[in-house]
Amino acid sequence: MKTKINWKVTTVFWNDINTDDIIRADVLQESTDKEFFAQYAFEKYDSEFINRCKTAKSNVVIAWENFGCGSSREHAVYALTYNAVNIVIAKSFPDIFYRNSINNGLILVRFEDIDKFKNWDEVEVDLDKKEISCNGKIYSFEAPDDEIFIMKNGGQLGVVKNYIENKEIKIVKKEENKTGGQTMVEKIISNHVGEKVFAWDKASAMPIDLIYLNEVIAPASITYFLHDFWGDAPVWDKNWIFLIPDHTVPSSSIQVSIWINMMKKFAEKHGVKMFKEGRGIEHIVWIEEGYVLPGNIILWTDSHTCTNGAMNCFSIWAWTTDAEYAIASWAMFNVEVPESIRINLTWELQKWVYAKDIVLELLRIFGAGWASKRVMEFHGEGVSSLGMDARTTIANMAVEMSARTAIFAYDEEVEKNIKNPKYEYKKIEADEDAEYSDVVEINLSELEPNVAFPHKPANVCKIVDLEKQIEKSQEVDSLDFPAVKKEDTKINECFLWACTNGKYDDMVVAAKILKWRNIHDDVTFVIIPASDEIYKKCLKNGIIETFVEAWALVESPNCWKCFGKHMWVTGPTGRIMSTSNRNYKWRMWAAEAFIFLASPASVAASAVAGEIVDPREYL
Image (tube, rainbow, N blue to C red; front, side, top):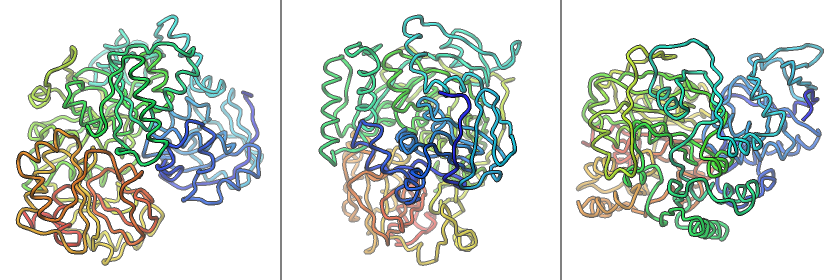
């Protein structure tokens, strides 16, 4: 690639453009051809985007904060690059989108003064000098030299192949002589690279322990693996690669069925373990199976991989390219050791306030981009009052604050959930003198039930402040925080599901509310246990019967509508209460629908009432 390139600004976006905005979920599984996804770029969000891109040979996208947040779908990068978008200049990027872009040679530049650029400006970027020229002025930007090198060379496939042959790990120290205490993630990475590292140190390669691939990403990763790594090359370690169909189960298209069959053939050929459709959602299943253990580094092809940090491990997302490289090399490349935020939880939750209310409170206070590039590390006596189901709920939504992942300290609850461990593990605790970028304290006893308004998980208020939030939404009335009227809080669809809140404790809470009550006549309530083990436990204890008697629809374990792919299409009048992790526009199909996020108790109570209510009225 040239080091000095001329482009034209064809689009300027505002804050928090998410990957659902860039490309919709239901097309992700329809091809392994990267160029295929170009036709869907910003299809719903900005219908003229593709036409504008056609006016220039190379395009610049300008954005404000947090461009590319949300789902880890690498297809968003393909959708841009195959529309001749060669550079995105923004104030900030979430880690997942940034890494996916670097892997595929899409140039990203972090730059504060975004208002310097307007549509149709001619922009010249000099990667060697790290300068942007526009309207006769020159602006400097900062970027690590190794990332510039990868951008200029269109990705890092060559780096990966070199590592496979030499197994050399190079550490670049931010502070050469730094010593002292370490955070939990610093310790875990140190144990894997063989050298003591701290935040902002960078490892050329980071060995991993396990990798899991679902049917959204496995077929593409397998295809690229066979193409890039010598055809019939064996996988690096067949014993610790796992395949699971969970997002689109049962299959919703011919192509998905073909891909699931492809996964089965690959698993059979290479001796890789593949789980049967219906076993459950990956993040929940692996804890049940005994594969998620303290001190390990686990790669997952899903943005909510952070869920399993509740088990005292470094559980981090990998998308198509990173997964392909990990299958071949058993490592992740160009890894910067993240800073950590220490979150101290004190006291205990009041009765009928739940883990979802904790993470929504964090989103309410700090917003969607707060934890970008950092790890959310949970401590304090309040943690000991939370069971594993609660902890995985909190960890799950760390990515909604753009965090790299979340991690909980090792304690009796973690130990209790280590069942039939499949390999050795190491308990990880932070040092007393570890350094944190922020220290936050949350008094659990002061929390109340929360609800997130459309179209962003950070649009949070206490349910008792519902009227004030309605007024606020009407004042803001933006794309990601639209005006909500009182009648919009009359709910007609409710969902209890997802890796966020489809666990057994969540089912128990909902059953307490629905026992001897009927779901409102205007409400359809869909309930999906997150695994077959949870489903069977609910059957044994009469919980499924309670749901059915209340007129709920109980479905088999899968990611289902939370993923936005199939099985339930929401119409324009949809007013939805959901326990899932995202409420973006179009997430459940109809652009006019409103999705509110809340705890299982709040969702179940609202299903009975037919409107958003405080669950404490029903428990």
